[in-house]
Length: 316
Image 1: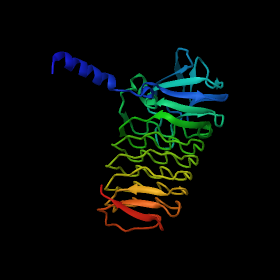
Image 2: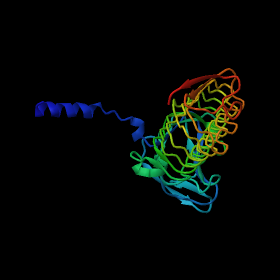
Image 3: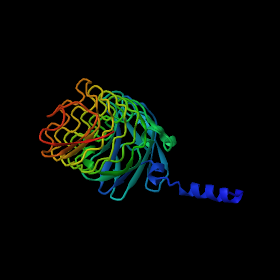
Image 4: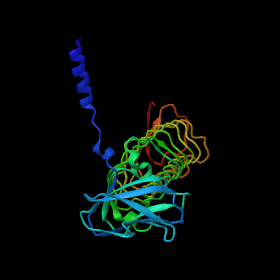
């Protein structure tokens, strides 16, 4: 092959690499109704070293944190009045929580008023969010799950969570009780921390579409515990490829998913403490469970294969 041909071929290969534009977009909140937007701390402690927002086509505005009222202000305004059609982008550096139950959060007060899109990493990695692959411990715990915010969010299908390595509690209850969202974005992480997805979509009763797979094959204690509990509209679970389970990893994962009719779970070793405790309690009846053909475990009921479901086998 000639040098000219190699150059042309390399050029074509470069052109064929398509980058999702949402990966380059900071976390974006688009409003369809009038609402109030604010950024609060619930514990009076701020671990975010920098926060700035951009409203519509305006300039980036640097936020200022006040220890007196535990809030950020932008141009001296704490509670931002948003109108239908307004778009707000957010970049922050640092972490949002100091524990599983205390930290900072984004507050939106009007039900069914906004959608989330763009790259969630901009809430943690600031201007360097595009190539970030990690989410530290507690970094996004509870950010969208406090007060009126869960009822305000109607769509997260355009949101990217591209990190592949997750810290402990990092997505803890991130969208818990967000009762209007229907679609969960892809969750590509393969290195998991303890409690990383704990109750992430708890009681999201409108959810119908989940990722096709949760790809991690090495799990962490409590990593998926109660992740989709109370998601009463989902019918198919993501494929769960891990063959060795760990303590409490799937506990309560699909509890009260009353429409669920299909699970493919490839574990061969379920000896870890409470790894399947009540994971399929109150799921739908008459479903299909795909099991690893090498698995020898036979547990049925709330903590195994749902009672009355058809079992199929498949090699890992």
